[in-house]
Amino acid sequence: MILDILRAALTGLWVFLEIFNRRGMTNPDDRAKFRLAFWLLPVCVLLPSLAIVVVPGKWVGLLFWMTFATLVSVEVFRLIRKAIGFTSTRSRSTPIPALDSTLETTRALQVRSYEIAGAPRSMHGMTVAFLSDLHCDGRPSCEWYDKLWDTLRGIGPDLLLLGGDYLSREDSLPILDRCLKGLRSLHIPLGSWAVLGNHDMEAPDAVRRLLRQAGCGLLEDDWVPLDRGQGRVVILHGTNAPWSTANPSAAIPAGGADISVSHTPDNAPLLARAGARYILSGHIHGGQIGLPILGALLSPSKFGRKWTYGCHTLQQSRLVVSSGVGVVGLPLRLLVPPEVVLLRFWSE
Image (cartoon, rainbow, N blue to C red; front, side, top):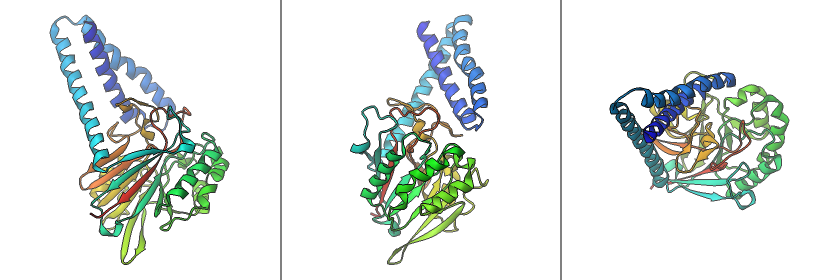
């Protein structure tokens, strides 16, 4: 019976996480999140366990055994898909010695590289760096961000894209201004381009001003052609949806976009249907605190933990979700290091 109770409790915990991620974590009201967790967790975990004890007959235990086996199969399938996404892009991570940490805490930094074959000829040989969720609120320090920009300077990407959430609260604007100091001195051939995230709506106009002062162009439900010379043009699109518009794909041109930047991966299905070939997102922080093998438990996405991190295939499109750079809430990362995403495109 003890094993039956344990299986029932784990099944209930899985159900809790699915409901809480999709309904609670996407709610901007923190008090509403705690209220939902307060009553939902006991209902999901305790009731199935009580059912094992109270309801007579072996069929209840058998039911939970079958349900538990199904959930394990779902998790294994999710992990396999995640592994396929990494292997198909020959992905690898490289720790930065000056910003390394044994426990992969807030101060650690890695460069996650993706080698993407089959790109349009206009993108052949192009290197794109992607940063998301900087959350410049004082932790890590401004000097840590200086080293982050030095890392990018050493990489020398053709294009730099920023995925939103540059701060978490309005009183962090002076810190953000200081943290962007190193960005102003970068030379990026195709420029630096940014979208806004949900936390930027605390002070959107001020964030826009600081990004422009740092040399970033803003892609707010808009697209731009990037001329690489020799007739090679890359179409870059960005959206602030759902915080600035209801339709994230409305601004994608008729022929589609080569790269689309969206703070949240929740926009990915619409962007893929509209013809975005490569979609770059953040927002979820990879869960910020992960478990071995399983990874993130908490994920602020209406799709739950489907796209918490890594490279995924949607129709004819690729979605790359970054673990981000900064932190929000608890100033800690565990098994989810901050990262610079580096994408190298090849047409063959």
